[in-house]
Length: 394
Image 1 (cartoon, helix red, strand yellow):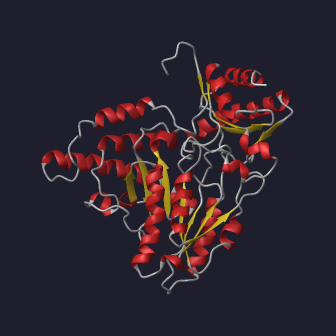
Image 2: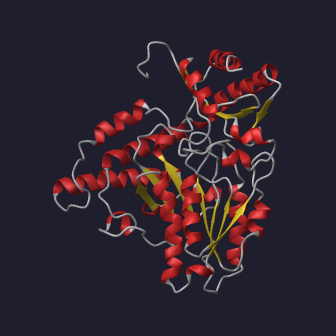
Image 3: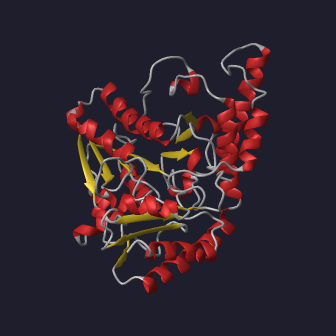
């Protein structure tokens, strides 16, 4: 599969996933629709119809409408679109940036956090709600942080490092009550509620109504789809202005020529994630539980990072007190045929994990992290091999 002579264990599914054969097949078929979907000639109309079919299929899975689906280049762009788009909508209506308030969490993906920090430098204010000791945010604290001038609440569904699952639907229900109290007022549309669900589709239902969100971010390569395409699902009526200027593609929200091929790959990946979720979750959970139990028996100086109950079925994030150089440990594990990571692969140059730091505990906890995000078909043999390799690190 990976071109290596010996069988390797790829336990870095949180970073990216291998392309599913069905996705590759769907993309191969879609290459026939190579024309520009914006063109009005016959080839363009065929391409537009294929793109529309992808949009409809995604909307059905997400319990939304087809014209609420906006294809992007990935999760990072989708996150930037919603955060900056909501702010730009407010500014366009005459609200000074210095009057804008946003609520988020301390453990969001860097594409959210860095965007928020940029807005703070320009004058906006942001409240970062912390987590408890197992990495779960309190819905009550999120709601309590909302002010009269809060325009956006953004909270990820599942954390990319420690796999914790947040109470999104509870937060969403509370936000709807806040907005209902504003009916008849100018602020009845705020705060907008967004969730970055990029890590979730293989393991969790991501329909907008079930989560009670106004906007949802997805990324194809996190669910065995192609790299280079994501989706922002955006409910009708949600205040959000384009953050790029150009043509009228994606109803003016994302002006660049769409890739019918990538859209087909995204759609097939989302379909596969949705169809096989129950079996996938059951298999992965059982192997993960064995892994965690084996770690507890093999090591006395280990800490599991994140909630055991409310976490993704394939995620095991741990800290070892005696791990002097985590990145060297990853290289040694790689040499042993095991691919894993220390923290989010989007973070470079940081000695410790800001996500694990948010959990508290001893100083070494955030520095000495290893993240194993197992394949859905991981085996007991894989677990035994990982445990043996970890012992060799000491």
